[in-house]
Amino acid sequence: MAASELIEKEEVRIPVEANVTSSNSPTQIHPQRVANGNPTHHASTPSPPPDDLDGNDRRGGLCSLMLIESLNNKLKRRCDYEKICAEAEPADSLPSEWWKTGVAFLYAFFNLVFTTVVITIVHERVPDKSVSPPLPDKFFDYVDRVSWAFTITETNGLILVGLWLVQWLLLKHKAIVGRRCFFLIGTLYMYRCVTMYITTLPVPGQHMVCAPKLYNDSTGKIWRILRLISGGGLSLTGSHLMCGDFLYSGHTVMLTLSYLFIQEYSPRWMWLYRWACWLLSVSGVVCILVGHEHYSIDVVIAYYVTTRIFWWYHTMANNRDLCGTSTSCLTRVWWNPVFNFLERNVRTTVPVVFLSPRALLSSCKERYHTMGIERDE
Image (cartoon, rainbow, N blue to C red; front, top):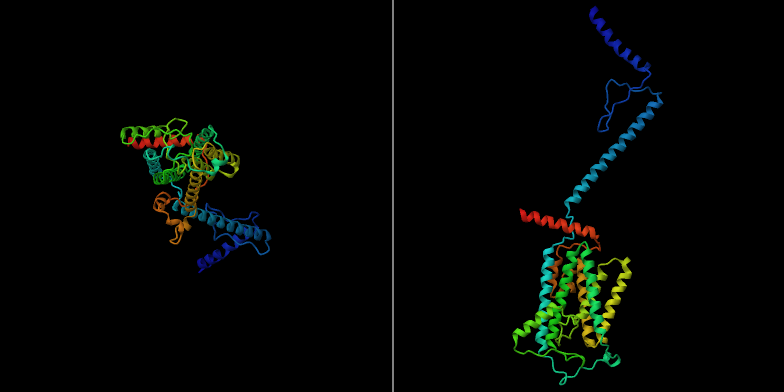
């Protein structure tokens, strides 16, 4: 009995001593923190007395700190989730697809070569100046011919094409823009082949010198075609000595189309550059008429067809929802399947972004290095 009573007394005495010691201790025991920011609770830690105001303030600060850390962890998890979702989405909405650009280039090259063939054929049908004099033209009635005007036309055309070539090379999305340019060039020159072959107009002035007709000389015609291709169809190079390619004007097509692409794919802050290109284009077109190298109807039709096809194509490209409906008149053109082939994977408007020359060279080196690795494998 005495032993059991002693044990009970000891069991009662121990918590009393602990309480006395904890209440009389000058240091306050705080809960320890672990890596995840959650405090560890100890059963032996006593609660502060009700009159301990400092302990209540510390407890409130600890609770607010825990709340802020929990919110921070939730935000981090949310950001990680959004990052994973963004990576899961298709990031490349403007794929290059250079092979499609190559197809468009072959389409344009074929139609340019075919144009030289049609010019050679039409040249044999042009009536002689003594038999069929030039048709009356209102512009020619008021403006006399200037012999050097057509040289300005071809010079302006070469400058515009060169400027557009440099601008195209510096574009970030040059593959998409390139196949648009090649497709429009090919289509416009294909239309030109049709109009030239259907209606053969007499020469617009007595000053024009046409090469003699070859009739059944097929070899001579082939050499003329090759000479026309090698000289780019320009009078400056002396390669264009044939007549009949009047309706409609190919020079007007290139002057107008070059400016339209320069204007479309250049930022607004380059307004001075745009105006300079516009002046080159307009002065070049006017000099065609001043030099009496084309009828006025040739220039008007060339301008109308070029601008309408350009604006039509880019309206369809920049408004895919509009041309996706079955009731849209934009989809009734014959080249709508070709358009869908070229623009199928372009899901947004092409932004005007330029690459620095250094970035352009580095990208070319990287592409060449990648091709070399694939060739070795």
